[in-house]
Amino acid sequence: MELLRDVVVLVHLVGFATLFGAWITELVSRRFRVSRVMDYGLLVSLLSGLALAAPWPAGIELNYPKLGIKLVLLVIIGGLIGTGGARQKRTGRAVPRAMFYAVGVLVLITAGIAVLW
Image (cartoon, rainbow, N blue to C red):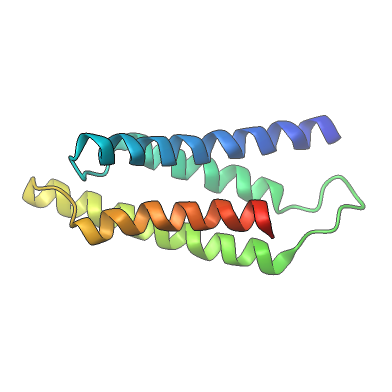
């Protein structure tokens, strides 16, 4: 059971890496656009994070305030990516830079909470 939990943690990290890597790619190319890869990274992070929030195997103590804050941040990131993607499709222009930078900063804050708390 512990091995399964470790695999889910690995999948969660891959989701974060996919989201942040796609954001870095757009930043370095100076396109400031929301990509499908960001959506996939967000979805993998959300689903694996919800699986990790379940108290399995028995006996694991979960830090519910930490999980709640990470979930709220993930919902905000999803809202920014969704809003930016819809605006991007409608106008054909890049996402506003403040919105684009907010996604990256919030992803880093979420990772920081996971590692440091």
